[in-house]
Image (cartoon, rainbow over all chains, first blue to last red):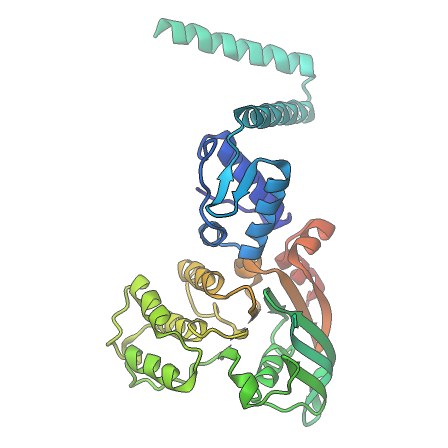
Length: 128
Length: 232
């Protein structure tokens, strides 16, 4: 996985977000075994303690669980992953609407643009 | 016992210059700690005191509860700023040298790392580039199973890709009971592997805190904070 860390925020928070993003994008699938803390830390070039902290936090939310004998896994609860995806979609849209506001567009106008573009895409898709 | 290093009112003077002034510092096990400060702030002096290469004028410095002595040297692995290995040695000679010197030296680990670096152990140090020589020395130091690793400017002379190699060597080789103390002023490159930082300024410890706490409190990177604190 590609890890990208920016410098102004706590590393463990960013690790949590990126593992979540990995689950949302399907890089990690439900029930997948995760690499060891050390391997993940080496991959992201971060401190193993920090990676551990991030994973423990993800465990608390239930997204990741530990099997005492065989390692750490992504949850097999598909509905939980679906919820995470929906949550992330909502956040993305909210963020987009906020940014459009900063550019001087009311949510209604934004929606009109979005509808336009979606319709255009539909019609070109149909032509193909 | 969880404390690996304890400094109590530690003071070191070089004739009229006070390099360390009444330093109180406690380091726990299992951490990677950045010792950060501008040139001449006392970083190397502290590291040399830990290794018994200098003796303080007053105060106390304890490793595992003991003053620096041959016993503490067994558990402290030191990467000095400058290399002390003679140029004529082959890489394999340096490995034998370390094996003779240190009981905790893991020869197999050293050779594994050399293989990963695709470095022929029969090469002489003389024939290696500056960066490769630094990597060899780091491999030697990190192949010991020490309690405290003191790395003085480990990434000073190498390119950014080699820096990542060095950082990975550090994080994949220290164990949960060991602490790594890294002195540097190249903070941006190193801050993501640090648990804690110690800021040192004119011989005083001005800050000792967890990196993630600083980031969430200040909302900025350690590098940015450093530039603010040590602005010239």
